[in-house]
Image 1: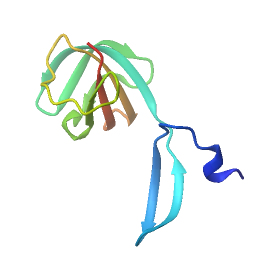
Image 2: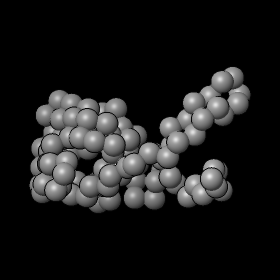
Image 3: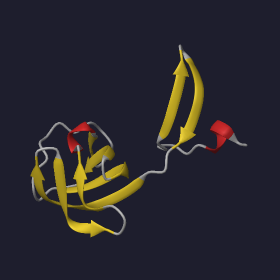
Image 4: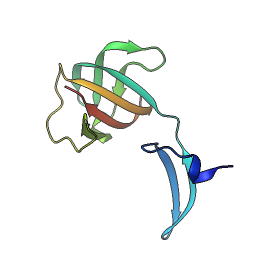
Length: 101
């Protein structure tokens, strides 16, 4: 009930398409984690503080979309000391990393 009318701007969804037709659209439960990068080791990024359910270590950060604080594509390098927000499904499925400082 409500379908697309209940969707919010900027909401993450899972879309199943057949050709040019949207066959199924489901909203995703996305977690938001904020912190400062403590270290980056290969595909692993560690924050300075621990999230209550996700911990402080996030895998495969290099698969996520990188954006600046306004949501525009970020082309700089991530490094220790950068303040970020992570939008993820879990600690292994990062959707977006937003660089805030």
